[in-house]
Amino acid sequence: MTETNNRLLRFARDYFFIVSGLALYAFGFSAFILPNNIVTGGVVGIASLTHFAFGWNVAVVNYGINALLLLIAFRTVGKQFVLRTIFGATACSVLLYFFVPLFPKPIVDSQPFMSVIIGATLCGIGIGITFTHNGSSAGTDIVAAMVSKYTNISFGRMMVYCDVIITSSSYLIFKQIDVIVYGLVFMVILSYVADMVINNNRQAVQFLIISDRWEDIANAINNDANRGCTLIHGTGWYTKQDVKMLLVVARRIESVNIFRIVKAIDTDAFITQTVVNGAYGIGFDEVKVRLKKYRPQVNDECMIPDALLRQAYAEKNKENNPEQPEK
Image (cartoon, rainbow, N blue to C red):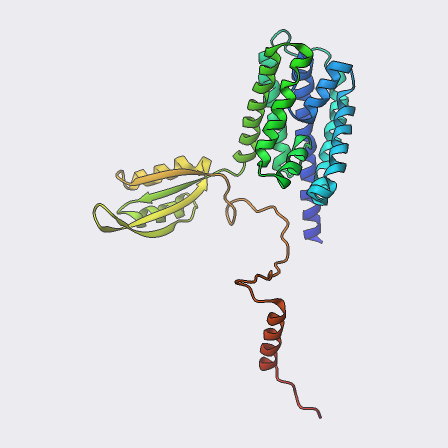
């Protein structure tokens, strides 16, 4: 019962943050981007084009295009992908329907570039929060998923192609290059901010420490920083002497403390620090994926066919558990 309650709690928390992230995206887009006649990428960008050209409702067009894409993608990218994006598309369209009429004029008036920066930052944070909690805003990632399945074009590259084409199409309506530039700036800032939000939560650092006082440093890191160390045996090629190296993984905010501990013990210690996008396990993040039961696959070259596996298992079981004579 406790495990069920924990799953429901995680489920509710994820969807709360997904809706919150999409609400922040809808607010940033409605209050800073759309009133300045700026066309962004994605399906929202296509909806913006129809809004400027024909006066159509952005939220309705956004939902209609996403529904059509999801219908087309159902057999192409699979049921799981489609179901995962239905909620995001619905929530995003409903929020846009609510926010767009509230801001007929931009909050920051007569400063389109400032509006682009603020709007892209808010939208990037919203998208980052949504993706961090396994959500999706739908849009051109549906098209990218379909194209990347049948071609050699990567998912990310296809999304860039779609967004650039949509943003550049605004020239047909406004006949202004600066509108295209604002749209491209928006995409760059949004991508950067979203990436920072997504990676900042799980970003860690990895240290490689070489010192003659490795044992004291390892004990200090264990006791003072509450982090584990892995001892690696190596050879210095210049000196041809054996060396001991410590491998330490810690949170990014703990990096200063690690440096202080090492330098307090050995000022001549050699230290390298690298960024780790994700660290999972005890003391770090939990891997949030659905695990499938492993089933050995038949491979003509290196795997044993299932029939032989069953036969070997039956013979082994017979040896361990001989049949009892009938009474």
